[in-house]
Image (tube, rainbow, N blue to C red; front, side, top):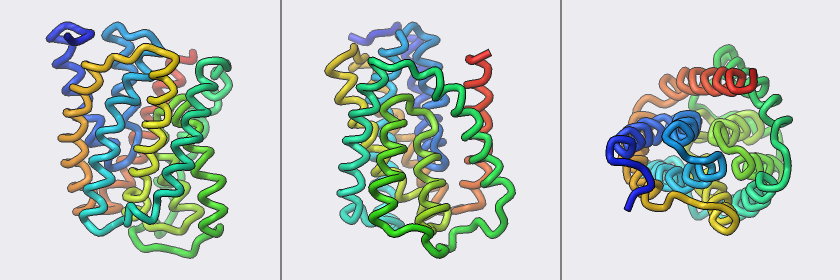
Amino acid sequence: MFEVTVDLLAVLLAVAFVAGLVDSIAGGGGLITLPTLLLVGASPIEALSTNKLQGTFGAATAAVSYARGGHVDLRSQWLWAFIAFGAALAGALMATVLPVETFRVMLPIVLISVALFFAFKPNLTDVDTVAKVAPAVFGFTFVPAVGAYDGLLGPGAGSFYMIAFVMFAGFGVLRATAHTKLLNFASNVGGLVMFALVAEVWWATGLAMGAAQIAGARMGSAMAMKQGARLIKPLVVVTSLALAARLMWDWF
């Protein structure tokens, strides 16, 4: 039934739980799940597609959890979610036809910049600030840009959504985290749809990992809503640096 043996499935479930917890707080869960899928024998395209499948469950769970906690109105995000979905479709299609080495080279630099921003920017709290751009400009520029990246490569997309909300929409850290999850869900689904059409997906394994993602995301979002920026900021720094280190290791 499953595409892997029982012992490897147990490893993947444990990894998916941890990834769901981390991703619901700071993004970057793909840093954990994608390399693990490759290590257990998935081809690169199978790993990308299966990672999208299992990641949709964690993102959806976190989105609902934050909405129930009163930190985001999901109905107000439907247009942005649709844009993220379409952009991820295009990004996933590009992943099947274009070389992505340039993105892999640039990504560690961007991630290190994200980590430095959250580590050293003063007064980065859960309090909202003044927006730098109009909501329409944000929705039609930053949202599709991150959505396309999520379809093309994926890991770190949640962190990119969050920093865009903080830097350009003026959201506090917790509110920004809450608003990333529906968009992350939509871009995961967009990437999954395209990969399902052009590539193989480990459906049984991915669905089992999705169940573990749900458990991890519920725990992580509850922790984030309780601790706010005190928990989210250091975890963003750690996950961004870890993802950058992993990508540079693979590159060299």
